[in-house]
Image (cartoon, rainbow, N blue to C red; front, top):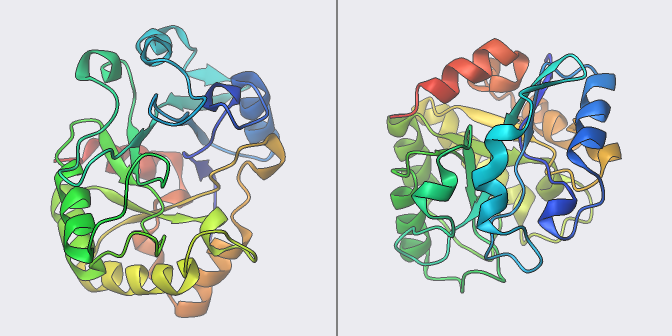
Length: 238
């Protein structure tokens, strides 16, 4: 499968990553990316940038080193009603957002509670991607998640950091397989992401792509095959 998109990456503004926007974009360009996204952590994450960082993002060039750049945010889901940690006026300039659960921002609920939070956050106007829903710390009903993602035009993420050997996320590979099976059932589209926190990991999707091949996941449901496909799907958000 052609793999030319990476939309979930972090810079030094996240507080625990190691390169600048320009360094990450240069790396993506050198690796043949057609579309590259920066999604620094929103303010509830320890050490992350202030909300003003995101409001000022309209000044960031949307093309660097010959590739299209999207500037987004990894929003933290902060309660089981699906609220996030960036007010609408500060999120307005963003091109898109990933919504994720992190243990420093949200105490895990029951499977029903976690699933409800994911389903509710899909209604957020900026949320195009649900980030690493494979983390077993937050049990989820993957059937309901995939069905709702298909209905809303929201992408579910297959995260390289989750399925690589030694991943710190609980039962992530097994959970990713369950998620993918449900996505195939309902026609929910997915995006493969590096979750890179350092430039050498940009567009590194080796284990995720191998997993897709292993289970025979439908290629037409993977948006990474072109910038045009990815951008079209982002516009489909309901």
